[in-house]
Image 1 (tube, rainbow, N blue to C red):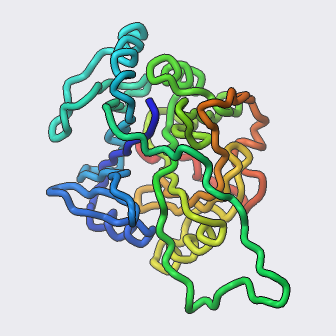
Image 2 (image 1 turned 90 degrees about the vertical axis):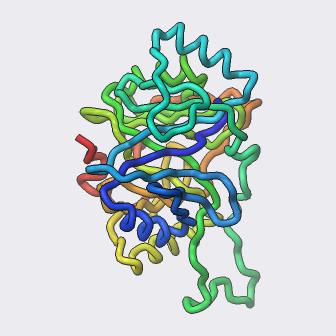
Length: 299
């Protein structure tokens, strides 16, 4: 596969979800009994939200080139992964199946939405004798550019690495023992397209959204606090992926992340995956990690 096409969640109240994601800077569209999340100036639907009794991961959808679909189907068969019928209300395209933790996965033919090159990561510096920062009243709202990745809960990190390598052709970027792991799509992608953190069951931890600069990471944190969503973690910088981050806790105990300047792995590069010390699994610098940051509220 070449892209994370979209994620889908069930949440108790769509009106609260709409308020949260609009405050975050996304365009939220009503589609019947669901919501779709888009970035301003971008057509793809990056996320879907449905009504449910509580927050839970409904499915992840990955995009692949048409010529690769037969190989993916063969890989699923070789791994003994049963095909599932199309869930009610979803399109019948592609393949549906469960991962080892019963997270529902779809793979379908879709346009590549991962970037084909790394965006500029330069922090602008004002010339001597000029002011570098705007006045606060002149700041504009933060609007993410695109979905970067999602991180899901799994019960066995090693098993999940093997499963997604063998079935979808993802490649390991980096890991920290059996705590976390980060995988990328092989056709040119961010350092991680999909990531895992260990838990007692499957579920959804966070979605990560690319913004255009380090100022937007900090301004996004302020934007959400002013909108009534102050809880989270950041601003900081990761070791694994190298990106600057701020996580905002959503109404259901998971997170949405503002992210800038993540490592990029071109299709032509043989990236050397490493097993990092646990102290490097979360951050290079930043505030202390919230005690419940890795709690799976879907259990």
